[in-house]
Structures are given as C-alpha cells and as structure tokens.
Length: 99
Image 1: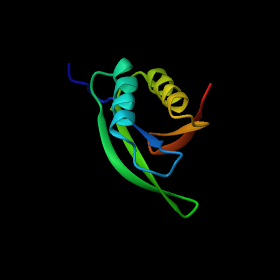
Image 2: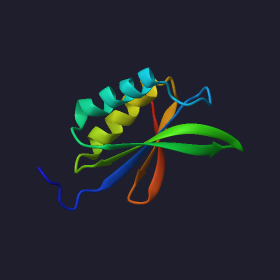
Image 3: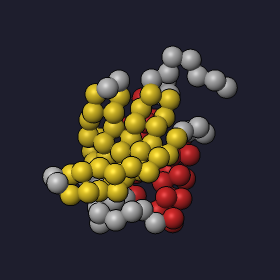
Image 4: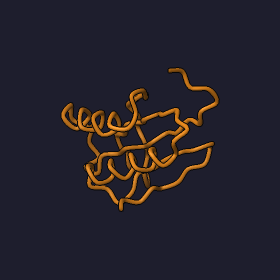
C-alpha cells in the first residue's frame, strides 16, 4: 500500500563501542524496526561525535504514525544499551530517551 505525503523520519543508531555493528546486531535492529514497520530503509553511515568516528546505521521510515517511530527509537535504545537514540523529523533533530 503506497504512502502519500507521509513524513519521513530518520533514526540514527550508533554503536557505543565505536565499532561497526556485527551482522547479528544488524539483524536484531532489522527485527526491532520490522516489528512496527513493514517498509523502511537501512543505510550504513559514519557519524562524528566529539571528534570520534562512530559507525552508525541510518534508518529511514515514511509513516503517519509518529508514536510508532518514537517507540521504535526507545526499543533500539534499550537493545543497544544507549541512553537515547537520535531521530530527525521534518528537518528537526531530537534525542529520544530510553524509557
């Protein structure tokens, strides 16, 4: 079912160990995002945090369900043992805290 005029969200998942995600970790992320969304894009990325390179996965989701995106961020933060996950919505960045 195609989406029309759906907001595009970007989720930034980083590895606290400053190492690329393992295949197992990537599959875990796919499962978590796939629980609420049947269609999304997962891209490898490189972030720079306080001058240190941080391997990231960029997850893009087009959805009318903002709360489901926020829930996904919280689930990812929990699974990745992070205090928050970055989310971009409508060009605005926010840090979504773990519950």
